[in-house]
Structures are given as C-alpha cells and as structure tokens.
Length: 85
Image (cartoon, rainbow, N blue to C red; front, side, top):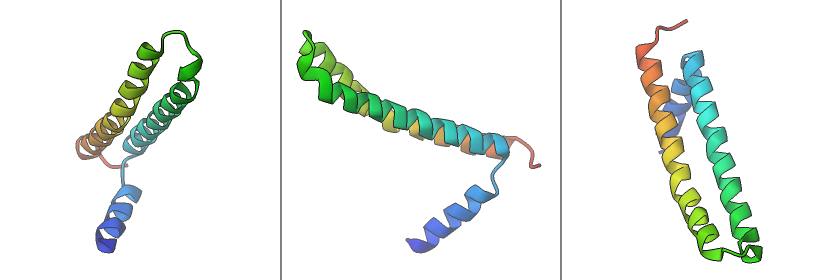
C-alpha cells in the first residue's frame, strides 16, 4: 500500500499545470460542499421547514464525493490529452 501511495505522489508531481489546477479546484469545491452540509446539519433544527433542510443536508453529503471523483477523472484526462510543458 505504501508503494502505491508513493507512486501516486510521484505521478501527481509530474502532472500538467492545468490538471493540478483542476484537481485543486475540485478539492476546494468538495470541501465547500462538506462545510455547507455541516452548517445545514447544525442549523437545520432552527429552520421552519426541517424536512427540506434535511433533504439538502443528505443531498450535499451524497454529492460531495461525486464532485471530487469527477474532478479527479477530468484532471487525469487533461493530463493525458494536454501536452507536457
């Protein structure tokens, strides 16, 4: 397992600049969605429409890993398609 992590870290260092930027943006968006879901979970009890807030909370928790996965896939596609600098 440690060898796989080391290979992945070496591969990420040699990625294209656009791929790194896309991966970074996807990670930031994922963190933002998780923060949004935490805030919904904390303040959901104080809102008049608890069922709707609970649905938003569940939806945000379900979509955050999907957003990061899609950004990682697109970053790797960009790395393959775009030429090296």
